[in-house]
Length: 326
Image (tube, rainbow, N blue to C red):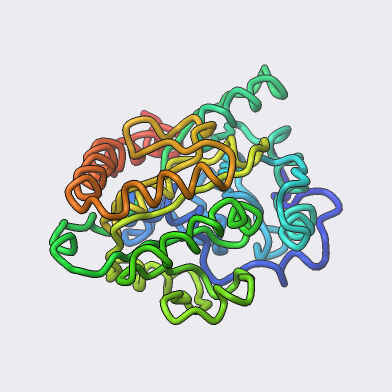
């Protein structure tokens, strides 16, 4: 029986690095299993740790868990590449080094079951821990997918919804954004305020900034938004290669046609794949931006895939079997 769920030599800074809520816990457990939390069969111990009478469920890390808390059985879930990737921003690398990487090393060895969010991650997990009981779990967004009424508008709303870990990916699309803003007077581009832009784009009247907000506030914001095109550029590297399909479902929530990096393995059927260079993004984005019919067709295609995959029942069945086996 395990005495403590805290990883050995956990950083003292860990509790200072986490928010009040966890996107991972929401997308891979809370959204689908809210009924168990409501009736008390599962209790929320911290933003990333939940527990039934016999089992503790840890998402990414256990920062914020009360000292001495334990359950006989442990389930661990990780939705990102758990080794260092130099392509990621320095600040993000330091945060994951102090928090998620330490937790992943501990729990992937000690947990009774380990889950991950993509086939690429699962292949790596099986290679590193061949004797571990493992599984793949896909995200579930509880927010409704958009209709397509916004394609009747005259504006052209383009977005990049990547957060901190996507800072390096933004460089792939900056020339494309300049080009589309120059060629299409009704085009607008929206991205997070946390991203640094060159001066010409930072002060551009048709570049809009998403304010900084927590996860729950962001969920309330994103469900009200509508975009015609969503950009998903990914620099080559193990972290990006292992990304889940969550962002594509998010793009369906805002009703967007998707452009994504062609080397990412999970994009098939969701939009148009784009080559690895900035000029590839310029060419494709400017080519499709003026074709409203094509954009709506692409948005509908991504939405159809999201409807098939974004299933509450599929995710909850996995947790039912793990938490409450017959």
